[in-house]
Image 1: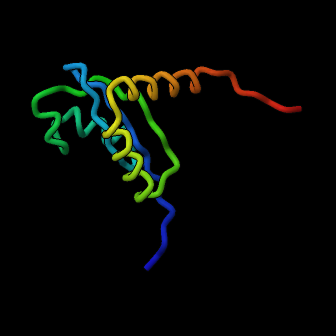
Image 2: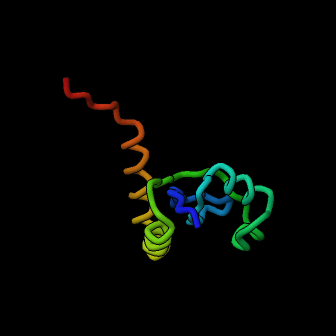
Length: 98
């Protein structure tokens, strides 16, 4: 059996009702499209996915699953802080040491 180095990501999607959905995948854009098409999670039967608001990459399946569980247990206020911190990091200019 071949050993593959598949990278997993944890993601959070904001939904039409203001809630958040957290999941894991190896391809976030593909998974988001599946959610938008009504495939996969039952969570989206009563609400629509609006946008991906958080992605954390570089996990193996096990660590992604553990991180997903941790995020799902967070209070909404903690999730909002996590999302805000993620956006700040993405917007920060790169630092270079010459």
